[in-house]
Length: 305
Image (cartoon, rainbow, N blue to C red; front, side, top):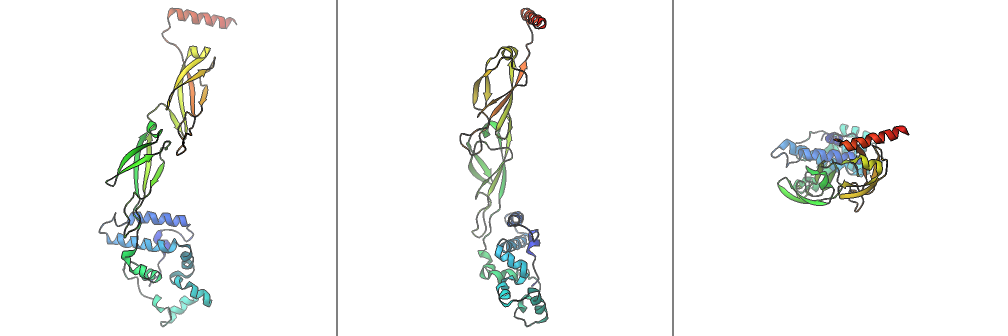
């Protein structure tokens, strides 16, 4: 049979890591999965080639032998015990039609579901195609929330691929964050495990706060008199109003931190970021005559000093 390059089958290089092999396999398996390509014989054949390559390369010991001995890797122990040079053995097999390993020379790949090489490696597993278990396809979905909903832990119903799923959304989930719901993807084949469901959160800001990580930011208007004389004001948070003290002679742009009044930390109970407020000073308008006179008097006093 012809040599089958399993690295080429998965679209990776010989230096690929185990994680890269797994990633490449999952991507191609999703693309050619029979559930997404019904009655497509070419896709079905490609899907089985991908699984064949993955079964060899995802096993570190088999991969090592495959890299060294190629299609004859299953005879690695025999080669090493006898001190054979696999390259020399290949040349010998080409010249000796009655060689012990002549079954592996010549001939084209038959069009069967699995290569002869795979059948010889895995014996009855390879020939019993109906027993091969395939993992189901992973599903991807988007879930839109507003910022105030993401502030608290709550449950929500989703409809994915015609099925209703009720999930718990932990407080503190971030915009663009992806969470995995195991086993809620496509069904496996021949008793294989289901795929997983990956949910991407899209969070719209329906508040006056700006969120950066677990911290919140907001501008707070301060009237001129409170800014000059000091006092107390009420400030909005996502958890209700809080009363804070304003120092006398507060300047525009002054920043104040309200510890623990920010956004909840994801999956960390009773832990919160901080709320940072920036004061903007509101200049009074539509002054009465009396107010104008008082401001003029203040101005004279200030200038006299």
